[in-house]
Image (cartoon, rainbow, N blue to C red; front, side, top):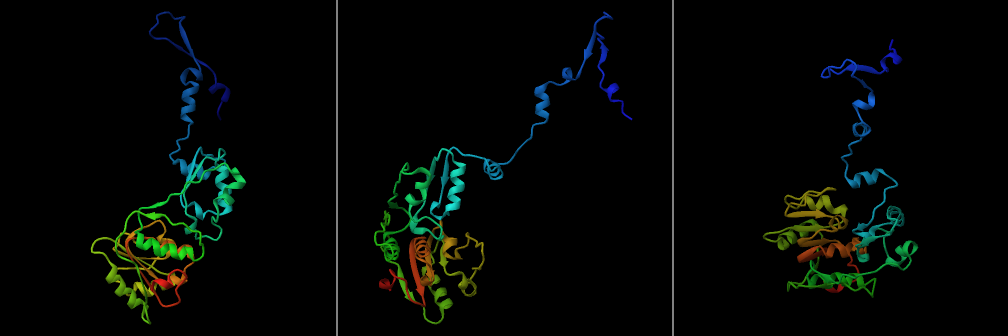
Length: 277
């Protein structure tokens, strides 16, 4: 049994260095450890990043938020971001022409007005450093077929090589393999962008290419669907069955190439591409 009252009593210790027997020292708990040291011993070491701590704290707020691919956010996602930004200080980067999600951005004003009314500034980035003028002309025609007022960014360079559009015939995988051999750069990377349903049959005819949710982007030839290709760029791109995509996904697929672009199809071409065959 522990005698708490006995264990808690104050002890007196003689000061050995002082010859005076009356000079004794009385020690208590606060003489051994002060409040600051006690607090240090109970301080929690949190090694999580700011993003990880914010994800675990529903009340966390940011002074400024930067959002990339902002056109893909749903109304619920916008509400979440606004709750995390009491000052409404944000930088939003996005292209409504590339909106793939049904709940994504159609108009910046429609999204922002409920939160900041007209207290926001829109800056249009009108220069395209990635896509050559020849490819951008084709991609813009696809978007303008549904949005006549679409203004594409101006390409700063031209390759002198126009993209081609061809009908594949009955053997689509074989036609893709031949087109890859034609388009593949001596040095660099090529992407085959095709509907997910065709990936297995195409991969079987392409050396070193596999079908999967996480493609190896270090390979010289990769097989992707349009949404997997978003944000990426390749020296050459082969777009397969463009009629299977929505306008936004097709626009993304066509603008991934920095040098050469080819389009293969077996079905009907979407508006904007039919005149290019």
